Structure formats: structure tokens, C-alpha cells
Image (tube, rainbow, N blue to C red; front, side):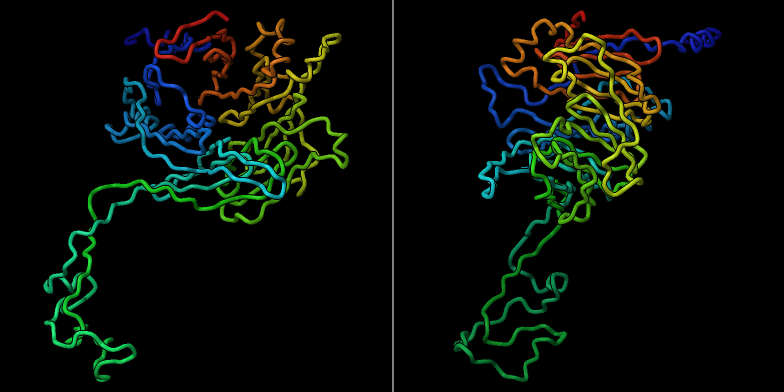
Length: 453
């Protein structure tokens, strides 16, 4: 909008943002007609890096597949830099396959007679360094730290070394000598002792070998992506790992299972510190388990974890080495007379995420999305109904175990929208800006269809 209308446009933009228009962009791993889905190919983890230029997926077969964004490379910068320069990004984000590698293999715990499947539970990107990508991946028991880097391929151009080129390939002066009648030496014998093999003139003694074949290795322009496992963090969890989270200090991360949270240093794989332990002395007294854990995006001393009772605890690592006590707890009080057999089951939080600014926490339970303000522990600032239509069917869902299904959640980079998944290939998007009534249900397909909530 140009001219005098610009002031009116700025004034009107103070309200909630308009609903997003969703359009299909890309699909990866699309099946051909009649092709059956293999169990090992089902995606079990997905994560964008902070720039949005790289995407990592993990599957039930223990593989990690990386994709990179291509639509910004043509203009020599990432999307954020182009927006700062007022460059109009009109194209949809486009990603292409980058590389893949086998992160985990199936294992067997002989001590507990337990089979450990290779399925990737979580992937987390780490800070880039020297144009190399770093990420953490975990299955139920073992966390691995991976480095993915581009390297120029070295090839053998020829085998016979020409004397004129020999000086540039190891300093060999004479690559071939004439053959004599006695080329072979008896075992244990030696030539004239006056011959110095360490002299600068690295010529070969006569009558020893007929010819020398050395490879000439040259660096080609071909680029190969190499994934290398830098660290393996194992044997620290008795129960299945449900969360890993990087710290903002770039040096540490946490891993969480049902009863414990451990703090690791990226450079030390044989030692971790147990910072949260909710295991009771008598397991019969166990009333709740840890379901998710995440570091604060900017405060390296703060993290939050959720429980199966629907509470979120904020802890400060500066208070004590073992954070048995929390600095804040966020939970919603039950309405009088509303408790039922399913109350505690559907209150269990399956995922939590910090907003980018660290001011809010988003949580997902079976029925709802809740947005919490870290400065207000009296209750959520917003509640979004996701599965309210399933409330009359809770008995059926309990009988077929669907009531224990877990869903993840996320916030947009600007903190104005939240999203989560549902059944039947649907996902929900809600506006959480003040005054927003945006509530969209979309099908994840080539032709996304809006559904009424």
C-alpha cells in the first residue's frame, strides 16, 4: 500500500494477524501406486535447525535423512537476511535431499534380556562450526553426536609414477630401475651397507626391484558428504529416553527418561550428572513419571520438565546439584465435580516447548494445547481445544489404548501461532496473539482441505 494510505495500514496492523493461507509445498518419500509402507520407513522424529535451512528426519529403521533448503541459495543468503534487505521472498520454501546415514542399529541388553530397537526417538540440531553440521540423535537407550561435513573426493589418477612428476608425489627420484639377473634377495640378507636409504637422494639401489608402482592421488572437484559419529553417550538410562535438549551455552545438553534427567557435556561421553530423580525408594509409591524436558532457549541455567499428572516444573540449576525441588510449578486446578476415571490419563502432558523468547511454554495433553506464562503459575493464559469431540468416546479409546497416544506441539518463530497434530492425517493451527480467533484444521496432503473445528 502506497501514499497516504500507509498510515492507516500501520494503524490497522496493530490488531491480531490475519489467518494464514495454507498451500501445498513439497512431499518427500511419496509412495507409488500400490506400494506398501514398510515399518522401518515410518518417520519417528523430525526437526528443523534454528535457521530453517536444514531439516532432519529419523525413522523406525534407525536412519537419519537430511534435507537442505535451496530456494535461498540462488540469492546468496538465508531467508532472514533477505528479509532484512527488504528482498521479497515470493517463492515457497524448497528443500532437496542432502544425505542420509545409519544412526542406530538394533541391540540386545544381555543383562536385562531386553531387545533395544533402532527407532530414532528424538533429533536435535547443535551449533554449526566450520561449515559442518552437528546433531544429536537418540533411540531408547543410546544418544549419538554426529558431524556431517562436505569433503572433496580424492581419486587415484594413475599408478605408474613418471620420474618427472615423482618429486611432487613424495619426493621419489627414480621410479624404475633396470632389472638385473639377481633381483631377489635371500631372507635376512641385505645389500651394500654403505647405501643410505635415508639420504635426500631417495634413489633405489640397483638390482633390487624391476619397477615401482605408486598411486598418484589428486583432489577432484566432486563433493561428498561424510557423516561421522563423534561421541556415543550410553549406559546412563535405565528407562526409555523420551527427550533430549540442547543448552544455549552450546556445550551441554540434557537427556530424560521416565524417572531421571541427566546433564551431559558434548565433549565427555563417559560421564553425566543426574540433576533430576523422581524415583521413589519403593516403586509401589510411584505416582507420576517425566514425559518431556527442555532447556530454556536463552537462560543456560533454566529448564522445564512435564509429568504424567499434567504439571510443568521449572528448575534452576544454580540452586543445587540435584534439583529435587522446583522453582515454579505450573498446573491447572480441577473444576469441582469434574474428576472421572480418565481425568489423570488425559491430563498427562506428552510434549512441551519454550517460545523463542523464553517467556511462554506450550504444552500438549491428549485433549488440549495450553499456553503458559513463566511469570504466572496460577493457570494457563490460553487453552486450545484439540480433541474435545472425542470426549464422549473416551471409553472406546481406553479399550484400544488410543487414549495413550502422544502428540507433539510447536510454536511459530514469532510466537503468534501454535500447532499440533491429530488423527486422520490432520493438524491444528491456532492463533495465540491477543484478540486472535484463528483456529484452522488442515489435512496434511497435496490438496489441503480446511475442516471446521
